[in-house]
Image (tube, rainbow, N blue to C red; front, top):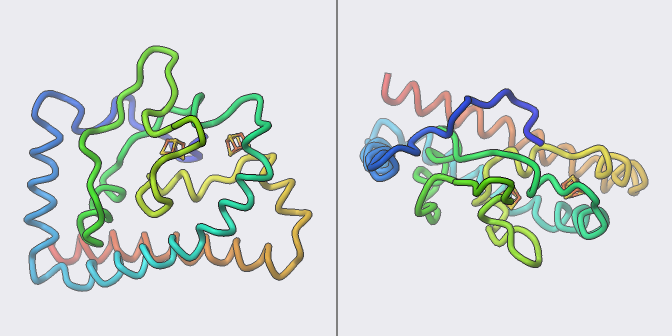
Amino acid sequence: MPPEPMPSAPPWSGPGQWPQANQALLILADNPACAPARALARELAAARRALAPAMERLCAATCPRCLDPCCVRARLWWGFADLAFLHLAELPLPLRQMAYAPGGACPHLGPHGCHLARELRPWVCDWHLCPEQKLRLGQWDEAERRELLEGLERARGLRKSMADALMEGVG
Ligand code: SF4
Ligand code: SF4
């Protein structure tokens, strides 16, 4: 599912690493020099929330009949920008790094789909449209399709700006 290459093992998945990583990010996000990154993270959260209705509509039209669901097949986890975003935007934090039982689905997949609010999911869950979704999107009204694609691009840009601002803030 994710279009980006992923590291071979989830970051901060060893004993004690998750709380350590979150403590470091908590301090970082509170740094006055990170104010621009915090503002961008809040904008990104709003942009992702605004995308949710269209994304839900697209998923409702494709996912229930999917024969190879990405949330079962894919292996993804919280990366640095995902976790930093949650801290900077003051959103609820995951209790642990994602872990998969052998052959198991994403731990956030419930009987009715993902149980995380859109803006709390790893970014790739919004960003990556599968072939079936792209096909379906092609059948949408031009203005609706453009609105969704532009919204995704805008969120992608905000995420990059947020990560850059964070690096500048601590550099
Ligand atoms: S996003 Fe695509 S691959 Fe994933 S469950 Fe929905 S239809 Fe299937
Ligand atoms: S976080 Fe949600 S959308 Fe993303 S892979 Fe897991 S169940 Fe699917």
